[in-house]
Image (cartoon, rainbow, N blue to C red; front, top):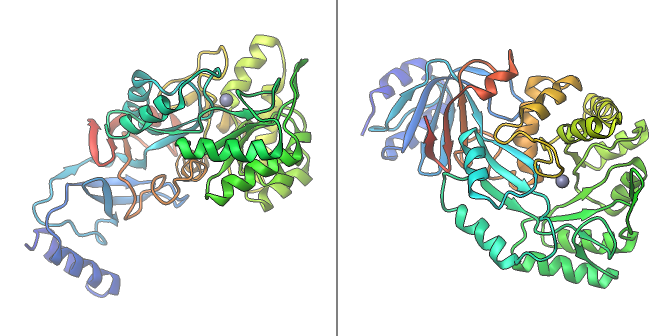
Amino acid sequence: MFSFFLPFFILACASSEATTENVRKTAKSSSATLALVNGVLIDGTGSYPMNDAVIVINENRIVSVGSRSQVSIPADTPVIDIHGATILPGFINTHVHGAYDRDALEEWAQNGVTTVRDLGIVGNNSNLTDLFGFRDEISQDSRYARLVVVGPMITVPGGYGSRYVTSPAHAKETTEFLLDVGADLIKIGIEDNLQGRRWQMLSYDEITAIVESAHARNVFVSAHISRSAHLELALQTGVDDVAHMIIDELSDDLISRMIEADMYWEPTLELWQCVSELHQLSWNTQAIDNLQRFSEAGGKVALGSDYGGYRCEFDLGMPMREIELMLRAGMSPLQIIVAGTKNAAHVCNLGDEIGTLESGKVADILVVAGNPLEDIQALEDVMMVIHNGEIIRE
Ligand SMILES: [Zn+2]
């Protein structure tokens, strides 16, 4: 049962208590599914990279991760030397549309985006049982990115969204219905005017009813918001994340209140860039400036591009345009990686399962040649993708 690595391991760090515990575990366990060795680990928590890293996977879970001297590899485990490549958590795009699509989900997964959050089906006629059934079906097949869904966006008749509610009681009932039939999260529209296009809007009482009934089931509520005035409403009602950076001026007061409320933000700069080019607007520069100030103040950002949300050519796969615009907003490559992994997992309500490379988490892993902290383009230099513990690209 003792592996080749064990004697080396004892010599390397015989004094540590944690080590002794690891050895005991190793002695008891049989072989694991796979170990990657000789990597540079960026685990998604925001920690600096670790050289000479090892990650051990058993079935669909990470069983241990750390430096070669800390991690023991069970006997008979297949070992892959990745020769100094960088090991990251699978990425998550937390703001996409039209993701009920096998080809798109396969393309995301192949490029290391192992989870996407669809923030609203288009139109009102889709059969939710079929859509959520599709989500369940593809979750059994590691070729496809994991799909996290809200179903339709809740609004009022004549409002921004596609599922209409007419009172606080109806709002509560609709939220509970969507969760009963299988929505992972709830999305609402808080919008009354974009460039002269007018909509009716959910009331304070209706939003409160939605948030309270979602929270009663430990489910987050994401809100479409484009302007500061509506951030006030989101703060007052306890919304969990904001699905677009706003495109008017963001006050310091709102920044600090959002941080205090632990409200997350998906910038969708790729969307604002495209919309601004199409309509000769400067929403992109305002959004970049807002993100810069929010991020510098310590606000939590989750990667989300609004793929499929407008008549634009969005990046499918790794959302590099979005990432480059986040860099332009002054975020560091390490902050962007956290936004695309740990923080993104949080807004998917999957923070305990995915988003970081820690023991016990699902093995969604992206291995890239080069160091994305030195050159973010390295994220596109994919060497290997592991999804649910299965190698789906190498
Ligand atoms: Zn959207």
